[in-house]
Image (cartoon, rainbow, N blue to C red; front, side):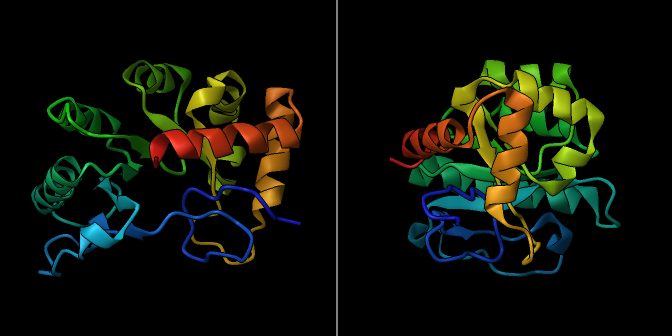
Length: 192
């Protein structure tokens, strides 16, 4: 039963699960000349960001990322970020955008020191299947402030958000219901 869960980042929305409407051009598509979508019709801009593991021009990725961040500031929309082997450059660019209404690092896989920098900035971390496979990220999940976490299924149509909630709640030493209530509150704070 997935009723009442928040899936902050999914490519396969399911009935009964609260999933924001997103719009963006993925960093893998940077430099392809794709037009930016109509951001006025979305809840969250993205996914956007930098992926330095991908064979995509980094300058084109950064330009595209900045276009998304400009729109997010102008329209007062939060952003959902794709960050792969690019944590430092992403944090540097984000520091230039003081007017963002919210930032979500989707599929966070990183260390406690990286997570602490995100928490200090008020950024949300979202955890999915990849996050749960990483020992260092499992520690991040356990230590994350409740007010700055989300769960997600990303691009796996067979992934059940309830299963992600169960694993994240167990790592945090809380009930699934407590985690469900907290992420619902976080959603209201991110997308009023």
